[in-house]
Length: 347
Image (cartoon, rainbow, N blue to C red; front, side, top):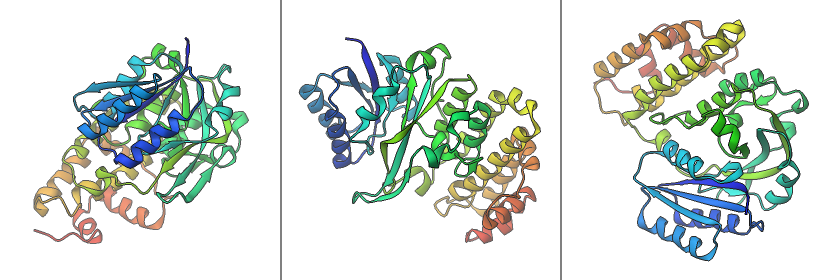
């Protein structure tokens, strides 16, 4: 049987109850031509046991086990093993919508390479925090240009010409044609643990895909689970940012040269992520390094050739006031003031 959609779920440290809910919702989908690829990325035995139970109960479920190598490798493993015409990425603590099948069915025979769908953000108690349909995601969806998709993705949590950039930089609530991914050698970047999803999206948009938009809600994104990267300190994040900017700089070199606005947007994206890096690394209360050590690391970061050039070109105009202040201090390399502003104690 020709598979219609391959659902890829990377599994590592998910809450058991949330994970079961996710799989139960997938199992409730009626189409026998779906496949659900459960990629255990060194997951604990109790999570693997849940996977095995669903594999026994429903032949559409497949368990693939590998040593822990990160979510990018897990998703790439899923892509390699997928047999569907379409690929859908699902986070194991989220839910596809109850009307997923009826919403996507009319679009599966389209000429699109990427199908965008609506989504909700919801809390664990089931209450929706926000709903995003076509009107909130792409008000001018009949005239989407890949240049604008890239600009919106680099705008991150902001809107670019009313296109919601944060959504574009996520893997979920979308369908990717498998041959589009394979023929363009697209893969999630290994070793990058922040904004790896956005990098994948940008590389996809650079391939000039045909896109279409579903007005219906096809995905429910949970927003009250713990994000370990944001809440804890990891020595890997800073190195990941170096790798991210180097890769983006390489991928976007022609795109940046084509239009001065493109370079400005990319530069401001770099500055916004540098602000985030202050919180998760240089000025993170869980970073036990001394003030002098953290200051030296901050200086080295700003002297990186790619980062130095981008931050100097970044525009503060459209940033919220707090970001604008922090961004200005970064551009001036004022680490002492930044550390005071972010309530760090010197040591």
